Image (cartoon, rainbow, N blue to C red):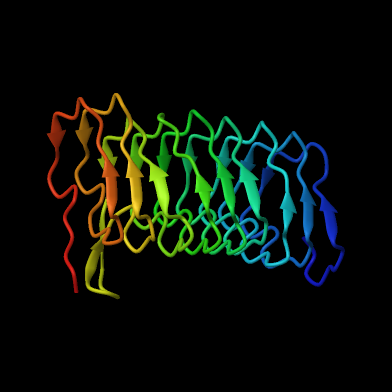
Amino acid sequence: YPEGKTDSTYTVPENVEAIKGHAFMSAKCSSIIIPDSVTTINNYAFEGCNYLSKINLPSNINSIGSQAFSGCSFKNITIPDQVKIISSGTFSNCKNLETVILPNGLIGIGYGAFSGCTSLTSITLPDSITELAHDIFKGCSKLTSINIPKNLNKCTTNYSSYDSKTHAAFTDSNVTEVKIPKGMTKIPSNLFYNCTSIKDIELPDGIIAIESMAFFSRHA
């Protein structure tokens, strides 16, 4: 995307299959139209597009890179069905993002994927998800309730020297209500590690194991 170009709308040419890293970084257009030929959006492709309030993600897209849309301004986004992983920081600091629709075949969400999305109020985690990384919803101050995927079996953590504490998926989020689905038999290790905002957890019949550190919290 040419530096200094000021058109408000840009259409990616037909037959383009991949949008390379930094291709639109900090571009000032407000609307981008992506053709069905695109299957890959690479790391940082639209990072810092603060004016980008409208974009379509065609159904053929199967890969979206790290921080690909970090700092964009759209309010809603639907992830295509072929995407299996939300990479680290993909939608971080999208401060106008309110609603996210995830595909049923999604299996994992990378660290900080939605961190800093201060307007996010609605997201449903599909049962196909098996792994959640740390700080996914950090700073999502309007996201107060969330569901837990019944096939979830791994939650990673990371120690931050910045605040001297270990972070997990819901650390530093504002989630107060959590619903564990019927059919889930164990609470994975670290699921609610250092999640101090949770006040209400609904556990179904059938839970047979709560793994180590699942509800551990260390207050400063």
